[in-house]
Image (cartoon, rainbow over all chains, first blue to last red):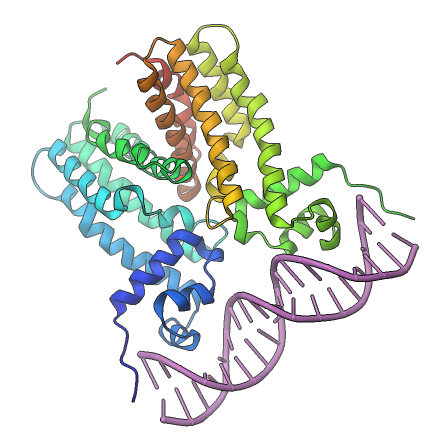
Length: 186
Length: 186
DNA sequence: GTCTATAGCTTGATAGAC
DNA sequence: GTCTATCAAGCTATAGAC
């Protein structure tokens, strides 16, 4: 009998896990097959362009998750501080309290231009979303932009220090200081 | 006639360049051969353990550079603010104003335990060096440690945002705020 | 949409001449 | 300390059956 289709959601989740840990070049088909339980030809059936297609599908999928989990609070009504706190909670969940690594980091080592552009667009959305909070808190557009970029950097850097030092605290501190970072005057 | 020995310094510098851009798995022998001008067997002659040996030699070599270029100002006499400024200048040079990527980031994706331990030790030295500045500025040991970790995270994150967004400013801002980050009260 | 089977290329690694 | 030559293993990719 014909094997049932493995749900897209599961495929995406498992591919994501591999790319997060190994990056683009580090993720071999052997890894991707083992993670999904699908054989190579099946992966090519779903992603005709091979790994490049997979990576971009994963970036889109994870980008959607990130939007609903983290970015959407920025759009809603309410005081900027509260919205920033909500985003921090979303980030804690999204990054598994620092256990997960960030695709925008791991996928931007020696991968193709399409992927790099995709990653840049994703980070741009993230920064813009943070900047909106800062503007709503009364900061100037230019300062808001800087604060937003620096907040993203604090989180990405927190993830790296957490990864290298084997402690989640640096990442968690970056979340704790997020609201102040985005909304405090000066 | 027998080909002359290619100076260690040049070999290290060129290998470093490759590992910085491609990470451990991304750096193939083809890449390493092209960068050094040495053939595969010659690389194995210098590094009997292959890539793992190369990476660890590169980490040691770059670690020494980092020590003299960045960490040594922390040991000297003088006001903490001045020393922090000196370190910021050293970091600007070391990271090519944001053009260079950090080995502690790129080499910690799916590489062997020895390399991960080496990277952790290097970052530990870095954090400790920053923390000393903070203590000399009068901060408590615990706060100094947190400030130091967060400062390293700000720099690593600045490098990532700079890399993804194609702008050196996030990294350069992380340097500009370094002295205050390490020495301000509270 | 899954699988088996196969192809050719690239990889990491070694032996041995100069 | 460099090189040429060679190797098995792993890699990406495709053809075709069910």
